[in-house]
Image (cartoon, rainbow, N blue to C red; front, side, top):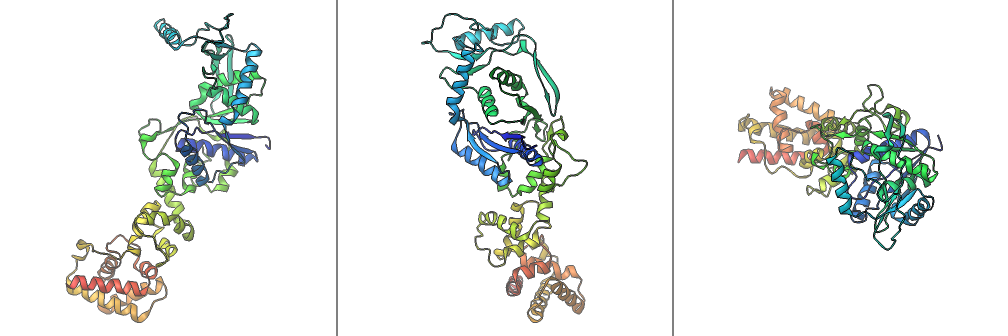
Length: 466
């Protein structure tokens, strides 16, 4: 569908959070699947709350996730003259009118309606007003149809219809002349020739008002697909209080973009029982028709599982590059020796996040200043001294060239001294790393290098003997 045009239109009043990221991903995948166009539009008409910092964070989050856009970013504030032209068009055609009702009057009408059990909608006081005191403060309202209904066939939720009697006359221009959200969105989507509007289902109630505006302005109405919300683990709507919900926060916590994309696409969309999708597979298989109607629950454990999968199967060189800032935040800035890619290869089987991997990698670059006393206390001092002496001597003499050779050397030491592997392996692991939670000894030795490994074993031997 080369004429398929979708957009992601965030408001720059905060960071790009996971709910917005999923909406962006669904739009991006839909465009890529059908060979359409993906547009990025920044809806910055809320000038009091919009910030450049938020714009930068949104763009950064999109780029980190790899959600490249074909057109944009466009900014709504650049279109103010166009919005005003469209407001005037509706006024000229009698499809909009000026309203002089004060805020106090509107509040009184609202309270009266609620007291009488009526829907608190604007009652149309100024709808057919003949006097026009243009020098007085006023807003401009859209003259909505009062009879019938406005409905649409949602690509996810099915048929949705609203009685027009329940929809009031929407304000399209404020007292200061600035256009309102619902009006701007319609003009932008129409002029950008958006064919499909894929967005969160918190916009369902906006849709009939927007459809009426499309029709009044003579623009074709796009197709709509409203994606169910994401719930937190406590089944409440996902929000900042549920923890790190911004995309950049997940990056800084050590998650990979491919893992977050894979996780987000499965929040509401399914393809059989498949859980893991490469970027190419997501593009090939994604279709909005397979997005469910029920809300999805954000499950951190599932995200961790996916992230661990992508770390485990990732390229060590790429992971090393991504790991660098996590090590730098821990004071490790020189990762030339040992080679960081080699270090990553020893850790990627066990790490769920890059933050966890960075913590486990510290001993490679910072020799132990203390040792797990409980682990060493399982052995008497003569045994520890004998183990450290034998291992250091064997490593120096044999000069093993790979992990298999190191493992063979340890078996040989055990055989020669009638020791069991735990009697040798655990003390040496503590000597090399400071603790017991570390990769295999052969992996550690080859990553550290023989000289550093021997030096650490000799240092541990001296500490034990003291």
